[in-house]
Amino acid sequence: MRDPRYSAKLMLCLGTIYLVWGSSFLFSKIAVTNLPIALFSAIRFLTAGTLLALLAHFWGGHRFPHRRAEWRHVLIAGFFMVFASNGLNTWAIHYIPSNQSALLNGTAAFWIAGLGVFGRRGHPLTRWSILGMLIGFAGTALMLIPKGDIRGSSVLAQMGALTACCAWALGTLYYRSIDTELSSLMFMAMQMCMGGLMLLTVAIAHGDPAHWAPNLSGLMALCYLTFFSSCLAYTAYGWLSLNATPALIGTYGYVNPAIASFLGWQFLNEHLSSLQLVGMVIIIVAVCILTLPGGALTDPKTLGEPKTQ
Image (cartoon, rainbow, N blue to C red; front, top):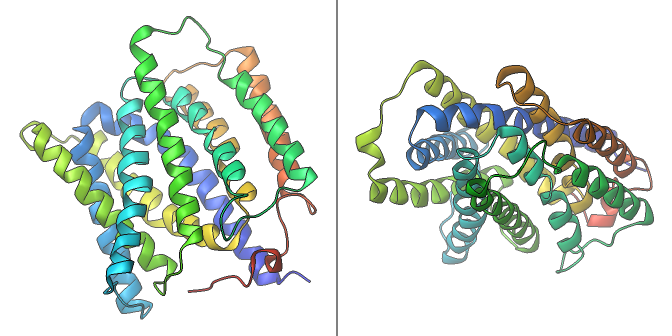
């Protein structure tokens, strides 16, 4: 029988990454329009990582990494999940609309669920999960149909966003496969710090500090992305990575584009075609299938005992 506390935490964490990361595309677009890309990203993750690490240590009683293997794990995860994934996504959203960036990021669901069958903590897909993924793929394909002609200048940015999705999936599955005594909160905090330092190196090499001229819109977007998207949503995602199936984790890739597209339409005057709107509805149906009992939402015993650090 499923523990009600586990189910409540699962729904809370899923809701957090759905709503917060879905709205983050809007704030990322505002941020890259007003701030140097690499430097803003570095400040975001270094600030969030430091705050979460201090919170984990002094409030949660969790220790900092001290073994070489632990530093290696947070370094590798930081490279894939912060430096490569977020760095490429932030760069890409500077050149393409926020709703298109969100749609491209929807492919992360397929990478996570598909690659999640491999490895020591691999989890087989149920028939409901496969059906949900296929329906979700169809909906995403409709959403990716452009409203107008694809500009040649945006193709490289689109490839960057797709590469970022792959990097995110690899980082997620790497985190699931390792053995570490670090709490999930401390691990997420330190991977942010490592990824933030990599981004800071790029920012300095690119000369971003000389172009730092913050304004109110840019600073508000930076604060939202730091405290909500990084601190709150990354913590929720870290718990899900250890306590939910890859297919269920990947459902955020279906929901976030719908939220991002709506916000882009409301606040950035970005529009979707009728086919893309149909795709959004199909995606919601796919999420429902994946989260029904017997789908991707399985008893935690299937994954082993949940880790509650």
